[in-house]
Length: 254
Ligand SMILES: NC(=O)c1ccc[n+]([C@@H]2O[C@H](COP(=O)([O-])OP(=O)(O)OC[C@H]3O[C@@H](n4cnc5c(N)ncnc54)[C@H](OP(=O)(O)O)[C@@H]3O)[C@@H](O)[C@H]2O)c1
Image (cartoon, rainbow, N blue to C red; front, side):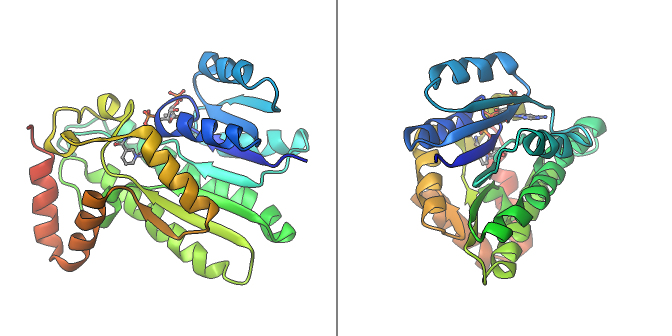
């Protein structure tokens, strides 16, 4: 029987690349995002697989629980959970819309935490499962002008690494993917395309493939690309104030 993967943010960027990678390996797919049309198109492309489309706005309270309940009602067991949906916003913290920033916390943190909480017990029971949480190189330092976004990704990394230890007696793996700037819709949604940090953005298929391989090998943390790896390691050794200054510099225009 084919295994099933649930992918949030399956309609574009990294999420869509994950769809292709899992489909190529014969996984049945549960797609979660807001754009039904794009998900239906994916469903048609992979008509040889079982593809379930769930139109959900995960920035809304209760949406993650609805996802879980729909899986239970359909008697679908999730073998791999990919918490990928997320977005960022660039600007002065107090000038950015508060509601949008709260929605970002709800999507990047709360929905990811809730989905993990709902699907993990079954994985522990079966003593088998994989979880991929998409963080960012933003997780490694404070991010002036993207303060909330960077903080959400620091949460994802810390939360996921803690679970790795909690689950050390189980065959359930938790992998955190930390991409740097990557060519997807993220740049236009977050208004960061003209910044220095996006001057050498990686290709989404390359980033997703690195994440996929790391997930399948049960790696804890994957930082994509050698420049990003170097940046993340440097951030560990620099004073936080200096790391924040560097993040502020790269958030400036090219
Ligand atoms: N691209 C980068 O430079 C970069 C770097 C580091 C980390 N990341 C992380 O990578 C992940 C994927 O982003 P991406 O770069 O692939 O960006 P993207 O192309 O904008 O894709 C974001 C995906 O999330 C979905 N999504 C957005 N808001 C949602 C909501 N409220 N409810 C449900 N789904 C929602 C979108 O689908 P719908 O619009 O159909 O809902 C879309 O499929 C994010 O967690 C992001 O923070 C990206």
